[in-house]
Length: 403
Image (tube, rainbow, N blue to C red; front, top):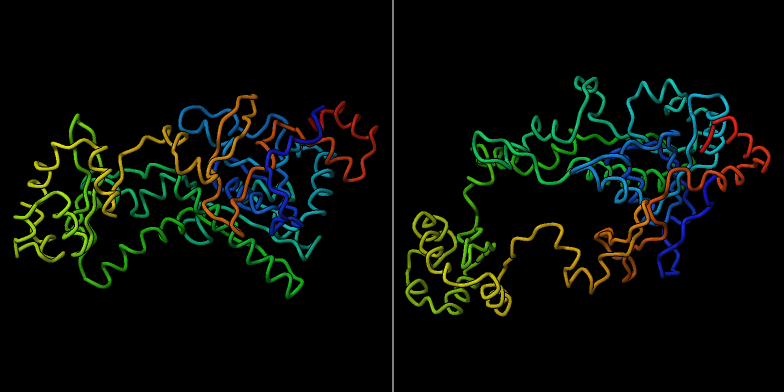
C-alpha cells in the first residue's frame, strides 16, 4: 500500500481558479497528460487512473524519458485493474465525483470499458468529457496518428526542413498544443455548464492542431498565390534575421528588423559605409540585397565572440539569442530569478527543477503542489474518500484489484 499523499511543494497559499474542479484522466504519453497538467497547474484536483502495471510512459527511454515527470506533476495516482468488475466499480464511483473526464485512448478501448462519452453522459449529463485523438471525426479518424505522422502529412515537417529533407520540429508540438487546446475546451465547457447545467464532449486532435500551426503558410499562399518556401529557404521579411557563426566557432542568432534598428546596428559597430549605402537604407532594400549583404556581415561579425555580440546587441536593444542546448536552461538566470523553474522530486527520489506554465495569474506563477506521483500513491486515500472501509481497501489489495 502506498502513502496517501504527496508532499506539497508550493509555497503559495492563494486560491487557484480551478480549486473546486475534479478531473479523472485516463491518459498516457503526452497529449492527454498535457491537458491534465494544465488543469492541475490551474488548481484542479487531477486523478490519474493507471493500470496495475502503470502508465507505460513511466518506462520510456531516450527522448521519452522526460514525458512522465513533466506532464504528470500536480496529479494524484490511483492504480486499478479496470478489466475486473470490482475495478470498474471503483472507477465508476470515482467518475461519479468528477467534473471532467479526460482520455486519449482509442475509441474502441473506452467503449469496451464502458467509459466512452455516450455511456458516461447518461449517468451524469453534467459531465464534461475531453477526448484527445489523432484526427477529429472524418475520413482519417480510423488511422493511428503520432506527432511525427501529422507533422509529415500536415506540412509542418516540410516547412521545418530544407527542400527535399522534411524534418520534424524539435519538440512534441502537436501533442503538447493538442493537450493545451483540450484544456481550453474543458475550460469553455465548464463556463458553459455554469450557465446551462449541461456537460458536453470536447474533442481535440493532433492533425487539426498541426493544420492550425501551418495556417499562416496556407494563408500566405491564399494572399500571394505563391507556395510558402521551407523556413531554411524562405525569403525572410527582414533583411538581417539569421544564425551567424562567429569567433571560436560559436553560433548566435542576430536580427535587425527595422530601419531604426539598422541605423542603431551600423552605429554600434561603426559600419559607416553600410549606413551610407542607399541600396540598403530600407528593410525591403536589405531583403533584396541579402545575397551579398549577409555574406559581408558574416565576414565582419566573425571576428567577435558570441559574448561580445550579445553585450553590444543587448546594450542597444537589438534582438539576439545565443544558441542554447535545452540542458543548459536549468541554469538560466532569467528563469531562476523569475520563478520559471520550480524544484521537483522525480518518482525515483532524485531532485530536479521543472519549467512551469508560461503565464502569471495575479502576478504569480502557477507553482508545483504535488510531485509527479508514484504508481498508486493515492489509491488508498481515494478509496476511503469514495466510502470504502479500511477492510474493503485491504481486500481490494488482496484481490489484486488495486495497487
